[in-house]
Image (tube, rainbow, N blue to C red; front, side, top):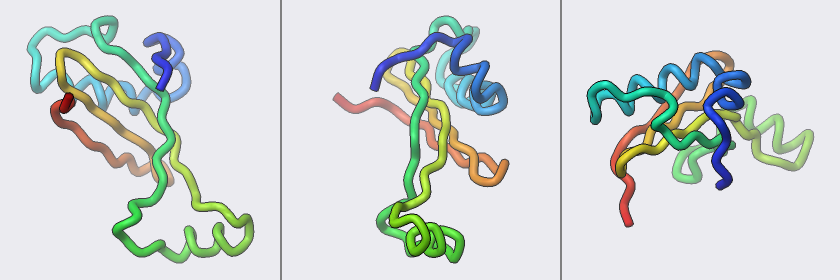
Length: 98
């Protein structure tokens, strides 16, 4: 993934950026948005879970699995990721493994 600037990430998904920053702030006090490496991400459905009705309809109509757009951030070995599904955000956070 290619990093983007904070202003680009916040311009596209301001609420998701706030959520990622809040998740990352749990692991590091006083964290600012400029210390984070920001990425725009696309999240597909979890291959371990069955597709819901809307996803099945998309597959039948378009031949593709629906993709959610979101934001990820990394700082000091930690990551946070949020994407939006019909304006209901989902997210993940944890440590980056090398």
